Image 1: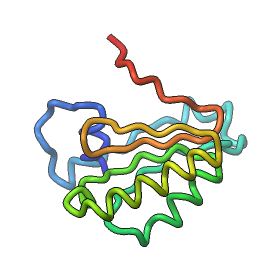
Image 2: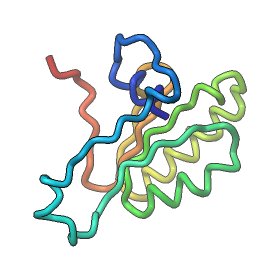
Image 3: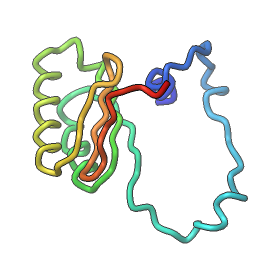
Image 4: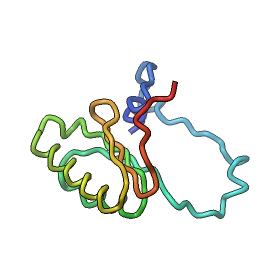
Length: 122
């Protein structure tokens, strides 16, 4: 999943080994002010391998979460890819959210009141 995030934001760094991939960050000094606050929204990361993950993706979107989906495993199967995108677009329509391709193999889906800006910050 870290590779997915790196690809999403265009990291030009060389790939790290599994041991180097995860680095623990100590954020305790920043968490004190809101440690008892519940999160109202999550950013979820998923990989589209088949249609069996679609119910969970839909559930996350209906619950108001933002979902980043790596669709590269499904790109080789046009029927699977087209069906999944059609289903996601229907959910986005239902919740009045937004959907966009990021690069060529990543999709971001947002719930109501979250819009995707199609222009890159410079």
